[in-house]
Length: 277
Length: 272
Image (cartoon, rainbow over all chains, first blue to last red; front, side):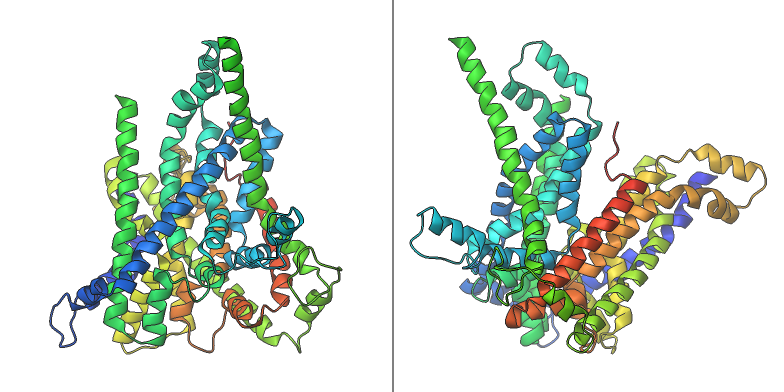
């Protein structure tokens, strides 16, 4: 009886998601393939793909996402390993150190990065004091600066899923490997990493989705010269009122980020199958 | 010889974990500290470290004459976040419960629909929603902002509630119905209280995310409704107003406080 009862409880949210989330996206899809005369046409997409500037923006956005994913992985995996080796007190500290930046407002974190990357910020000043740079410099409005900021902002999205897996993982597996004489790296590569892999892939999807669409960080740290897809969409609607074009652009954003995410998910499934075999 | 190589390898592992991990941990948390220190500067520029410390920007922020616009924006943000949290709890907590009581196969088929807003860019959704609203001959308004936030953030509530719902023993509800309580009464008196920790954790996440959201509000709010993150965004873009530092300080303090309270009530990561 309860099993059937489940449906009634899901219904409101299901209806809401279909009517208020998927349906509008459908309307947007239709708008994107509507030509100026109301006929079905791919003119908007053709116009976008013929425009080398626009295509460049799309590629830059995807590469930005991939670069951030790489940087986040490089920093996130050691944090997770630290968590694994730590005792209960340190584990709590690492967990809080991960949750706090994640829950802190995005605008606040972006503001902090303006201070850090600016001409009078700690990076520029310490480089000058160490004699590595002749004069103060600003990393604001550069892609390097943007990647540095996004890496810090998205790091918790990767670390948290891994930590969640490690927190409930069976320590005896690793203990067994150690007792059998496996060296540290080998333990990591053959026992810990396979255990972490599903969480890493899940984290990658979140990081990529967030890094390619964080409008505020892009426009504040990237400035007016570095344009990524979200600003491109906003410009078409908010300033130029080009609805069909904006719809086409946002659909390309959706499809291209979606493709990367599906690729990552498939990779994850493949790896899991391989692990089972 | 081989022994030495192995020991060097092990040492490089610890260097990787402690050295790199330590740096990464610092990298992740330091900007928060910098934002807090910055909020106490007594200068008008964003030089770090500040030359002197004062409460000058906090005073400017509290002053109702100077900062009335910020106060209005903050009030709007808080009320939108409160309505969003309530709405998300009303749809997502029952959904999580319902799904946890379904067969695994139908659950995996339905779940992607419920979770889709988490991975699809909210900016694209906001654009789509605005298109529908204007096609219906309506114009952006406060109510649409709340509705948009509920749609985008309800999945967060759903996920935390689901984690709790899966732990609830089904025999509890069965006992209640056997003793003669109706389905509604069972849900209200037995199931709902058990779901509370998940709803609290979810409510916290939804509230924070709603307070922080820019893209949905940007498209769906009428021009007169301004919210805190958009106001801060404008202050940063226009003049690098140092009051942004003070707002940041207050937001961080509020985050830490609620994080401690919620972590006490419902640990985000369950220990074994």
